[in-house]
Amino acid sequence: MDLAGVSEQWLQDVARTSEFVTLMDDQERLLYVNHPQPGCEDYVGQSIFDFVDPSYHDVLRQSVSSARAEGSPQHYDSEAAGPDGQLSFYSNWVIALSGKCHGVVAFIATDVTHASRIEEKLAISEVTLSSVVENSPDAILIVDRERRIEIINRLEHGFEMDGILSQRAELFVPEDDRAEVVAAVEHVLKTGETASYETHLDAPAGKRRFRTRVAAIPNDGNVDRVMMVATDVTAQQEIELERARIAEQLQQAQKME
Image (cartoon, rainbow, N blue to C red):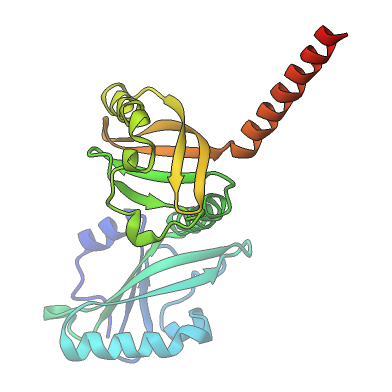
């Protein structure tokens, strides 16, 4: 079997493509490779398996068999070391040709190394970000346009998840402070600017004092959600109150003297 059924124009077009295209006959022998590796130019008539890592022989045979039997393209992913030893990743399609090329199988491999490494870095970044959020000393909330809580990194002070999600953020502060929470969220949603406020939190385990910063989460130029980062300043406030009490006592003692 040869390339008599393949037009010269097709071969010229394939030679210019960035994909790796290989043609194999019904005896698993190579007929054509558009981008042969250095030192492998004398490939015609050799078994395709001489150029494929043994760990992919089974999936390659299965793909060829299925492509011929079903008449539909078959796909599998692979990795291979190049001449420089650098590991590359490929997306492979196996296609059984028909007509004058009946019996010929085409292999089309796309180098997806760059995309794979970007995905790997994104996965690492996602894990890192998730760890930062989960272990943050602050409470981090995502709130929608109706100020309903969609996500919270963790719960403390006796709160239960069922009592938090889908509730409006301002409902957890004293009634006198709710207007300030609403105004801060609405300001960020409308302008995209940051805002902050300080208020008590009515927790089941007792009142806590929080300083909250509100920032926009842009989406295609719009702000549909905001992030609220609440820092527990209860202990700090108690220290400040104690310092103020001691300072007042000192002033009274000085007046008595």
